[in-house]
Length: 111
Image (tube, rainbow, N blue to C red):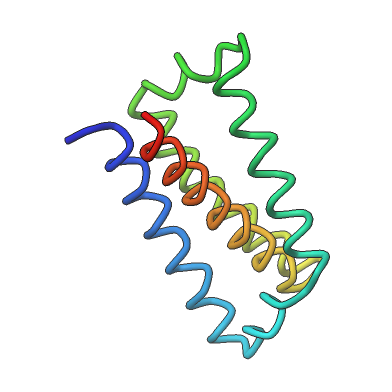
């Protein structure tokens, strides 16, 4: 299985869990928050930049434990921050995942 499929599958599962959380707490409307969109898109582009710039992130990502821990940390941090700040944080993470999928689609189209 190509790496992008593996990573996209994990991102999709995380996204589904986060949207399910928003639905469970009755906060799906936070997905329309401009702040959530801005923070999510900006954060995702920052993370993606770490992969294309000369940083050790890309080589670290190849370690299975790092990928698994990253997905778990994403869900745990989003959930923990949602308790402190509110569900708009979860919406921002959802927008970050949407951004990841857009970047992935664009890179596959031009690869």
